Length: 320
Image 1 (cartoon, rainbow, N blue to C red):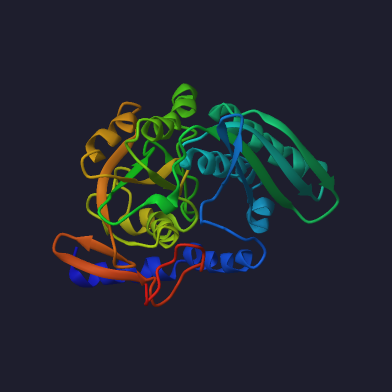
Image 2: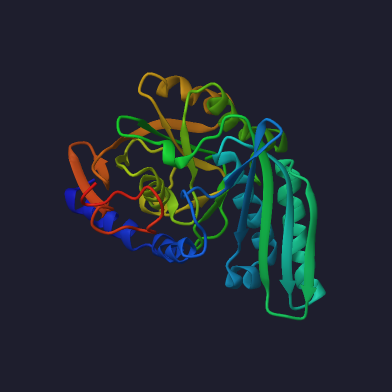
């Protein structure tokens, strides 16, 4: 990879719509106190912690691909629970559809993905006769949570993916393993995060979502108040996948984790045993910046000390 290519790659990540769209999260801070930047909330209950999250699908996506939007509503919620070292307990959906035919396609997508992942759909609400809109919420449980804010300088960055899958189309950024991995594996994949959490092999995690790998890492850094390098050559990716596209991809199973240097190798084990890809691909530091590295070359993606992304708690500042 030529030096100019790395700079161009950093620019592509920096200007990606999925990443720029996260800047609107600043509005949430005005409405809710104590936001810590994770995609789920933790509520103490009966000696454990409930993991509670919710996601709204893009209305154009719900209109254009109702089945795919239904499946994505399940995947995104399950990923948010798993990213915190949790086990999903149940999911509810809130759907607005123009007609019954559209609603049936969305609900079929929800049922299909929920069945593959082994997460029960325990309820929901449907309104017909209006422009399409879809939200879903999931509740899970954890004993030892992973939180993005726990990442710290000196930690090793790990990335874990299900790479035996396919892109949903030639133009969409969605990569899914739901059609290629056996259901029994899909249901067990998320247990790798529970395992590394409960064994103390990792202490922080974030799922890879719409901003892609680098954008999701940037969100994690802002939450933790630190910086990192992302080694693009060491990043696991599907055979033949273009690096630029992969950095912007929203995978059905993708997570970024922080581990102490002496636990990083062992932390890959629960993923590798399940036929998932997992490898060290960078390091956390105290710079407040995200940089892409390729051998001796380096390119700046974002400086959080000068330009916060969302402004959520933990963001590094120029004066500390």
